[in-house]
Image (tube, rainbow, N blue to C red; front, top):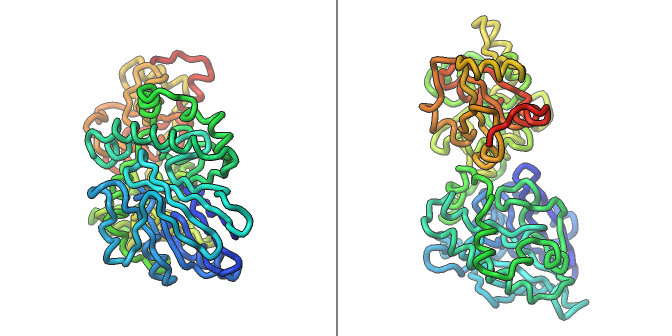
Length: 474
């Protein structure tokens, strides 16, 4: 049996290629929208992709299942569980074969058995894999967002992200019973999850790429709770804020993502054209590091650095119904393609053009002015707040703020900031901070782009403040 794991570091998302080396057939599970890695990996090992499937309707990235099946001529296998509201709208038109609890299909000499494990979502499936030439029992399970290393999939997303009122508790109870069902499987079963540490699909995901069911039974909190009521309380407590774009992903993946084709480099925008677009209201996203943006940026632009958190904050802050332009360091190999691919992975396809980073200096030359973001030291923060000449804005999550914050700081989480601008005073200095500076830098650029000009960033943030022993409110 052939096995290969693909990991998207920015989304902490995992997909898999499984192959039968006897028949040359291959199955891809939970593919992302970037298809080339799967096709290349299969070809390099003399395999052909004959089947494509996914564990559930994803909320954190755009699925590439339908497009990969069409590209390779593979069978598309999708869940038929979850009831009428949780069917794939495009399944019939795409010629998909529907899977239910107890379904079984072959990949040459590799057998795949299907289990319905609702909770994270109503239609969620897990796939048990048996390498039949060597064994008569499954060796492992692809668990998607049901079971992670150290955690289970959160059951609150349908309500908190997709607006399906009343589904959190129902999902939590279903998840409890799915865990109890999985408990009956053998301890040696390998667990291949759909996410690793850093994903917002759980609250305490481990960084190890895989586990065994026996290990999870001993050390995963979800298996330690035998009482359903206690499990429901525990699984719904402390879940991180779901990014706003999760609701959009659910809609896209259920109705059917549009066919993207190859990731293409957008046209390069002449320097003079950028000013015209900005004046016309076009969003311009500057992907340079926060430190570079702080010392000189084109007014009106939004800074989302092209790093590990790029897709997360792009999904929070870039509207899905608008065209936008990127500023990217195109002197670095493949950076433009990387940015466009990352954005396409969460359905942000409306990149109409890009500018190289030299556009910033060209703007200074032509217009004589760039905006800057001033910093402020911890000693000045307390003094400014005490004198009421400044407002402290903490852009961390509500859970982080509740656990401890600077005295007098108001909580406006970064993902909600654009919708809560009315709560940001315009008649005094605004000091933004987070835990260590990354979110505060994005927040400062957002406030400046919305015309709030009296901004200072406390880069040390709550981490520096609390470690120095300064006063903390809870």
